[in-house]
Image 1: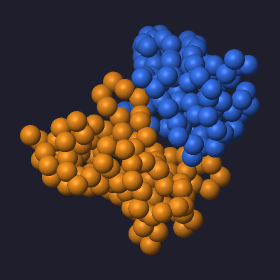
Image 2: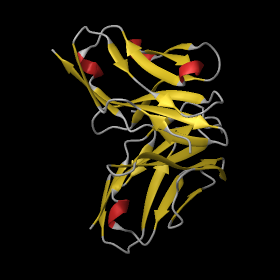
Image 3: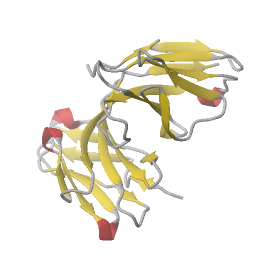
Image 4: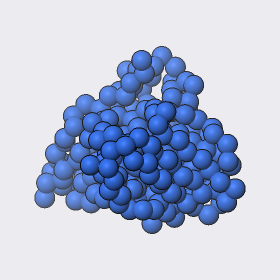
Length: 114
Length: 112
């Protein structure tokens, strides 16, 4: 158990809908990272927040957005969902604000778009 | 464009044999390099990372990797495979400008 929690574990929705994925980092960690893992795209870094501020940005679509709240939990919002958004979404956390800091991964949220 | 290449999407080794998983990256500037392991139905776990210190990096579970600038490679090795090493392995690289990319992964099968 990494100490990173993600909810929900599974999510099934329809095209065009909007969903929110939630992540709680390990106690004391200030950074939260979001990743997408799909058969088509592989594993992709989406975005990082550090202590409430966006720190680094990867291949995140404009339909996707994220934020980190004062209690340090984070939410990833996915809107206008398409079939191709079906994937496993991982959250990770680290103490420091640099990408090369050791990251601890949560178990993931599996999103299925029908 | 920056890229991370893992040669061999599937590798099979016998228990006790040498494990060699290959990773090459496209950059003239030494980046940060990582190897992660993913067990079925779990998130990723960091095995080891290179951050411009020693070129031979030792990680957890007996794994190590050698950074070779001239070959732009960061291959992962383990002298003796265990059944518990069966998993998916990902090489990842942070390029200049905080560009963070993963390879396509190598599935390791260990044959008893």
